[in-house]
Image 1 (tube, rainbow, N blue to C red):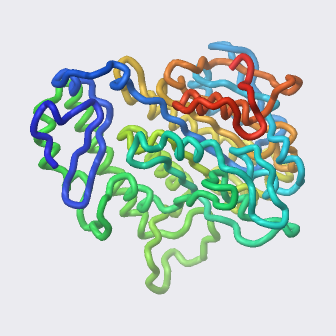
Image 2 (cartoon, rainbow, N blue to C red):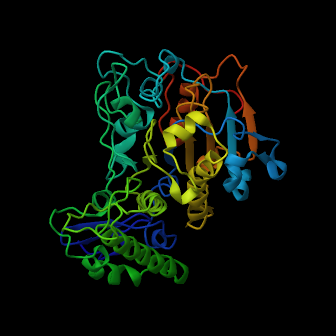
Image 3 (cartoon, one colour):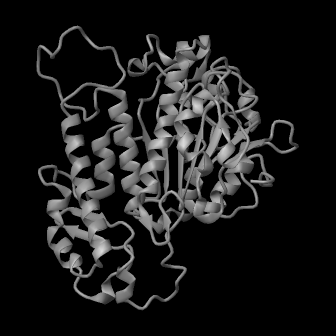
Length: 433
């Protein structure tokens, strides 16, 4: 449905074409053409992003101290040096129920819920991101976006379900949320309203609406609008090219090309390309307000990926256990994903703030290091939470009376628009946050 009058637009609107709808980024000039019922309604929303890497970090090099511009970051965190004044390092938090088993799967399945986990069947708790999706996800077209860069691990470990190791988002106590690992399908979920329209580019499908809307924009918004359409084009092209290559991170045969035809699976062959593409899809989801809640699991707990691009010769799982010095560059690759997200978010203007100002990123892992130590968890926060989070701090809760992860989740949910008195094993928020 084309935009035909001032009464049909707001700061957030849709371009529509046959089989396609595309939400737009935040545009300052649009509300000048309408009478807003409330200024609060037109404020940029706060987004919540959870990112995860399995099996912790190098035990000697995950640390931060000091504050503000003088904050010092340990080697695992050095990619975040430009963003340390937007970072809160949290030491000593834990999920008590994750310490009832000393194997990977029993330390991951309740990562975002703090719930107890059954050892004989698949049963844990609803994760906080999915509780947000269920309670306030109707504010956007997609309640939440759950992505992953490594597929699920089947089977059992010492009789316990390995499904726990592969999922951090849970829609019910017995049902993990579908984790989309295919960039093309994740992209389609953001923009396509009809199946079998893969022969048309998204931007081409909405050109009529785009031409109408372009005339209504200020000079600065017009440039932002053109940059946005260009970014959609660019990501579509990368996804199409990715369909020609193999799974990321897996064993690579000695042949330089397959000796027989093989179906395209849409996943880039190189891990850095794959992870960057999934980061960009999250950014698009937030920029278009397709969703305000996202979870991105870069790798499983017990991951079998080999990060040769970072100099690793062994699988991540083995390196996490043995803690060689070569693990540090792998860990730095993990935190460089957060630096990339911060950079891209800081480039997106939303009124007087940026997308980074209006977002909360929580990065976490299921143990402090790979030898199954879950008595404290590695957690960092980034962003501004819509003005509610002050960065440049290292906070130590290890000896605090309340160091529950669920206390942190209560704050994250409140910043994202859902205020609760209790979640999981906590009825209070972290002090000083």
